[in-house]
Length: 403
Ligand code: CS2
Ligand code: MG
Image (cartoon, rainbow, N blue to C red; front, side, top):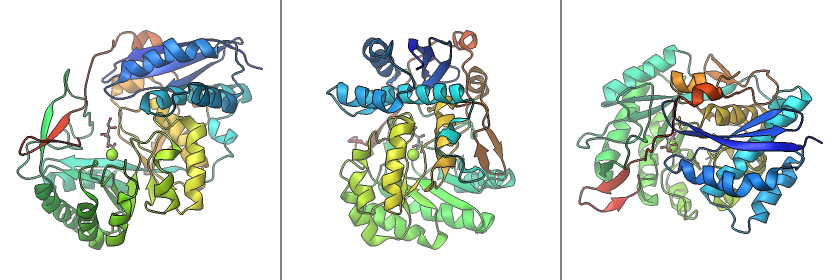
C-alpha cells in the first residue's frame, strides 16, 4: 500500500504553458503527470483540482488500473480531451510512483525494452522548399533517421508547421487566436515539389514524413497520397479530420502512401474503426491526451492485432513529463513505429530536468527509477501562466476551416 497523501497542480510557462500534476504518498514519494491541453490549459487544471484530486486522497497509489476505471467510469461523463488529459495525468504520476517504489525505470514495469532505442523524427521547416531541404540536410547530418518536411506555400502568408525560429516551433502564438488563410489548391501543388527536391538532396536512406494537419477531404488526400508515392513517404499525417472514421476508406482506395492519424484522439473509441478496418498504418495518440500509459497500451494492443504501429505525437506542447512517459511506452511496446521529437526550449528543459537522451537519431528514456523527470518548482514559479491560443483558419473567401 502506498497511500496518496496529497496531490496538486502546477501551472507554469517556461517558454510556453504547461500543466503538471504532482501526487505524493504518505511515504513521501512523488509522481508527476503532464496535463497540458494547448490553449485550454486551465480547464484541465480545474478538472483536476476541483473534481479529481479530492477523490484521490487516501487511495492506494499502486492500484493504477482501479483508479483509471474509477475516474473514467465514475465520472459518468466520459471521454473528451479535458477528462482524458486529467485521467492521463493521474495515470502517468502513478506509474512514476510505482517505478520509484520498485527502483526501476517505468519501461521495465511495462515488460522491458524490446528495442535498443526509440527512433524519432525531427522537424525540417522553412519558408520555401529550398530552405526546408537545407534544414533537412542539417537534421540528417545530426544523425536523424526520420525527418518531417513542412514548407511555406507560395501565395499563402503563413502555414502550420513552419516557424520563424526554425528549430523551435510554437503554434500557440498570441493572447487571442491569430487568423490564418488557407488554400487547398495552392498547398496541393507545393508538396510534391518539396518531396522531389528533398529526395534529390537527401537520398533514400532517410525516412521522410509530412503533416497535412486535417486540411483535406478524403478524395483530395487520396490524390496527394498518390502524387507522393514516387518519393516513398514514411507517412502522411492527419490527411483529413477523423471524426468520420469511414472517410479513411476513400483515401485507402486511392493510395499506398502510409497513413497516420490520432494526435487529437482521446480514447480507443476514436480509433476503433480506423484500426479494425486497417484504414491507417500508424496511430499517433499520445500519453497526455489519450488517457495515460494504461490506456495507450490498450490502444497499441488493438493496433498490433491489425498491422497498425504507433507514432506518438511529441510536439512542444506536450511537456517533458509526457515525452518521458511516451519513451517508456515506445521502447516497451512491440508494434512501435516512430516517435515525434520537437525540441523544447532551454527554459522548459531547465524546469523539467530529465533522464532521457538523444543519440544517433534515437531517444532513450534512461535508467532513473520511475519516469526519470522532475520539476524544479522554484524555477517554475518564476514563469507564471500566460494565456495563449492556437490560431484559427479561414479559406480565401473568409469561411472558417480546420486549422
Ligand atoms: C502538430 C502539432 O506535432 C504535430 O504533428 O500537428 O504541432 C499540433 O499542431 C500541436 O500539438 C497543437 O497543439
Ligand atoms: Mg500533427
